[in-house]
Length: 343
Image (tube, rainbow, N blue to C red; front, side, top):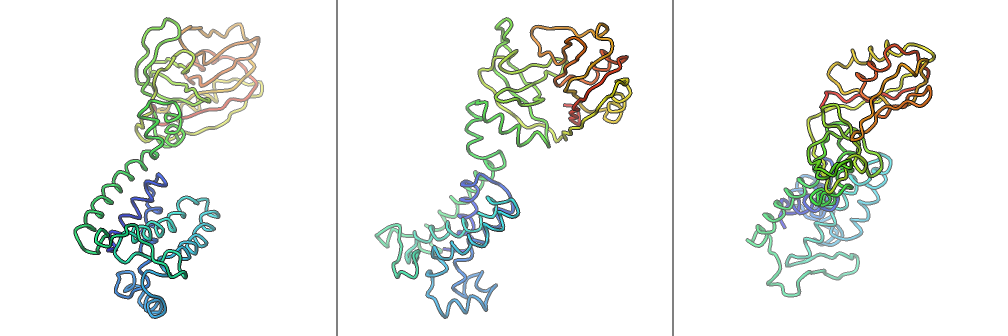
């Protein structure tokens, strides 16, 4: 087969099998796809590495050792330790995978390959030579076109999280939405397209909500109008899919109080991030609990609660915290989640 056909088959197969669109993975698979033809000095890769290809050509027949499982195993021995120590095992697996896919593809050609070299047995996919692929003939160009089409599909699926994620997303399964959120929330806004009902009165709750956090199989979401809800509690979902929004950053920080006024630290954080959604979680002890007024709304998630002298917050907006606790002296620790810009 032509070098370009080898490259298309290897990159398409790698993208689909590993569910990736990573440029390094595709480049490594491309490199792996060219290695089999190192045993001939007339190939493109053989001309580039002429001294080495000439040496191999003089000692081994074409489509023997470089097309064998020995060569694939050698590439595994090189690539997998690198992948392990660089914490990129799947990416580096692309190198031997590209080589393996190319050798499999060459089994469909007229000559076949000695896959189990040094055993002198040729491997073919079709017993009738007339039905095998001849290099440069129309049959190979059809393979090239199909491979490029599969590569485009693989890149689309890989950039969207892979085939499994796409299936779960199309079916509206929570697992697919969780996977999208976990992968994309550090760098993008992630929205939930919800079809479901309100638990309070069973009316429709269909709509688009911003995902604030994931807790187990549930999401904490907001409608952008001050309402916070938890799927499975306030919203009973029938179907939920996650969509990726604009680029954004999510940061976490911790602030502690030791019998001190809460307002200055919260005001400093709010002033430093004027265009961000800032949410507070944790527990603090207040000096005047009787002055804390937190409304209770049955159809919304209670992001703040008071019990004795303790105020417990779960993704409570910093603006509300300043209104409700601005004059309190408190003790405790809060986690601050900053999503910038505000969705």
